[in-house]
Image 1 (cartoon, rainbow, N blue to C red):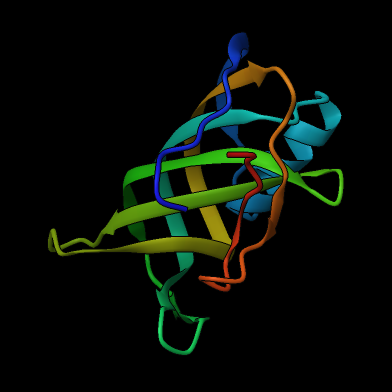
Image 2 (cartoon, rainbow, N blue to C red):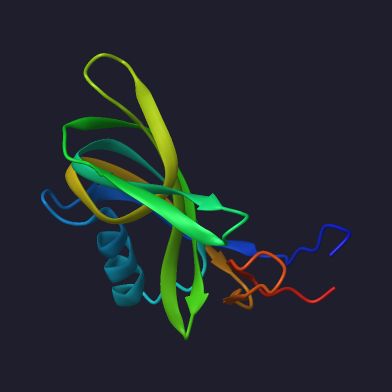
Length: 147
């Protein structure tokens, strides 16, 4: 792909709310999207976690290297989107976390990341939902867009 390819969406419903204490961040969002019939969305989350699983993509080996932090961490920034994989809404998110000394870490967000407290701002997008598919160039599950 040598140019930007996009799909156009209009704004649907907007949800602002609290995420459940002691539950996985990704699963909580995906469960809400299933229950609310949301197929496409963008979101941001603020709050704190009691443990987090993060990763970074090794472009040479085409696999994620992950690690888990078992400590209290503040969510400095968490942004992501919802799209479809096998007709199910799936979260793709990145997160930056801060510890009690102000040191930060970040990366791709994975389960299990356990919420201590969280607030979400989720914007539904209406239109033909994007679907993720394996990209042969990168090895990633990327949006399938026509050129």
